[in-house]
Image 1 (tube, protein in one colour):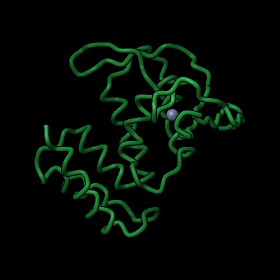
Image 2 (cartoon, helix red, strand yellow):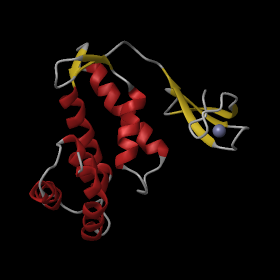
Image 3 (cartoon, protein in one colour):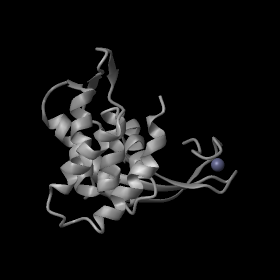
Length: 175
Ligand SMILES: [Zn+2]
C-alpha cells in the first residue's frame, strides 16, 4: 500500500483487527520513509456497481473516491474516521441492496447529503455546495434554511457552525 503522504512503497502494517462487527478489517499502517501513519480497511465487495454520470458516462463505483469526497466535506470537523467508514458502509449497503447494477451519480449524491445532514450540518452544507454547484449566496441560504427548519437535537451551536461554514466554503465556488 503506497504512503498517502510521501508516495513511498514500503509501508508496513502495525496493527490489524476486525471492525464494523467483523464486516471489515482495519489496519494501521506506518511509512518508514516519512513516518506517516494511516488506516486502511479491507471489506467484501459483493459485486460491481456502475455509476452513471450526468453526462451519461458509466464508471465503476469507487468506494475510496466516495470516502475522499466525504472527508473533504468533513475536514476539521469533529467526526472520526470510524464514523465516516460506518456511514459509507451504510450507503454502500443501501446501493447494493437496491438490486440495480447501475446507479445514477445524483442518487449517490442524494444519499450522501441525507447521511451528512444527520451527522454534521457544516459538512452537509459543504457537500451540498459542491454537489449542487452553488453559484449564488442565495443557494447557501436555501440549504441553511433546510437545516434550520429541523429540530436542533443533535447539533451544537448551529448558528456559529453555519457562519463558519459559509466563510470556509466560499473558495469552492471559483470555477
Ligand atoms: Zn511516507
